[in-house]
Length: 290
Image (cartoon, rainbow, N blue to C red; front, side):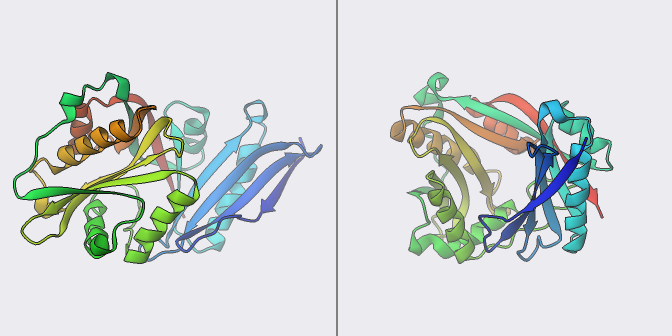
């Protein structure tokens, strides 16, 4: 079969990352598959690339995926990166494809969903933690909290990533604001609940949720973190419970909340289990070292 690999321009480059894109087409010009290679350009992750490769089901096992992968790997090498990450559902063709081509499995993610219609309001109420109060906002962090909220992002630095060479995300206030603007530009809504240490007014932890612009379907958790010096007090449960309460009130047509958690992150999985999240599927993260 004749396969042509066509490079495409990234329509949405940004300050933290950019993409290299390839389209595989047959001799008749019909698209067969694609590869998106995201290159991280920020301090702490400029060694890294993420690959999303897909081939139309009827075109699989005909060399299309291998051609796209070869082009993507060449792109990674050309950009001076040392590793590329890719994700595939457990037991899917992509799972077997990556394993057969030198990628090693470095992380298992468990995906869960909370059915809001099955959530009794009383199960997610109360449980305040002494010495802390909660603050909530929609969209960009309020100016008076911007610095301490940015500092609290280090709560994610030791998030379990197993053998993944993911580096460290370096945050500043502008990057925090840019991330919020990106959600807004997609027509979605970003909600944040933060725990504030009453002794000094600093943010001790946070949880974020993105909801479709029309308030229907499923919301997606973006991250929950508590700074190491504030852990073991129940802040993660309290923040997520408050987020569930608020989103039920604001968006009665929302049907569920989605979360993905590293299988080795036993503390966060226990919080989600206690709040009623139930597993839906698993994916594996693979890494190719170059």
